[in-house]
Length: 134
Length: 177
Image (cartoon, rainbow over all chains, first blue to last red; front, top):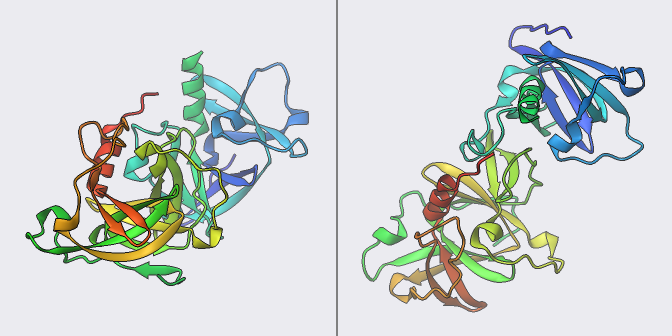
């Protein structure tokens, strides 16, 4: 995915699933509908990592990530869209939820223009951690 | 206590409870949580606001409820019943009375969702009974005493909590992943 940055804005991928929104930087991502995804490659259930459960009726897709352990696919419910956000919409995790208490792939928080607060996740890092766990 | 959305109430100049002179009085914000009464010194309470639903952060330990955005900053909401090791009452609470307290220690804001803000009570420090009955079994606080004492109110016995100890407990409690 193209990561064009204009001034103080940055393009992000918003994953909307189970009534929540998650933010990802698009530079290492490719998103395809689940029906078009190759079935041969094992994929990781992102919903489990995010702690969400989705309705059966919800769309499903696969998000492919380029990481240091190769191309990894995540199965995800919901839908995605690309949006441009101001850089000052990004927040670090509060100190209490900092590095010792939340996994490193939970990068921070993002406040959308709609005032919705979202979790910013790093799928490349999650892919590496998942690989290391196996 | 009114139904105002945001009630600023921090007495920034008031001395901490444990540094007040003998005979002095302290002001406490009294609130209800799991059908018990608790209080925190008003100098540690920044505001009592209408509650927001906290955003859950993946891999966050269960003694946090999530985060909210308030006035340009992110506030972590702590799960005080878990920290205090008190049971959760499944009885439906009156949602209209619920409030989000923003408590500050060491300049770090902590949100506490409470069932009701009862009000502010001024109490002579000499009236603070040091008796605390067997509730300090929570692993979060170790040898630290999160309960500063108790006093009587028209609605029953109120337990005074020390937000500095709450913060110390949270900082000390490591979650290994």
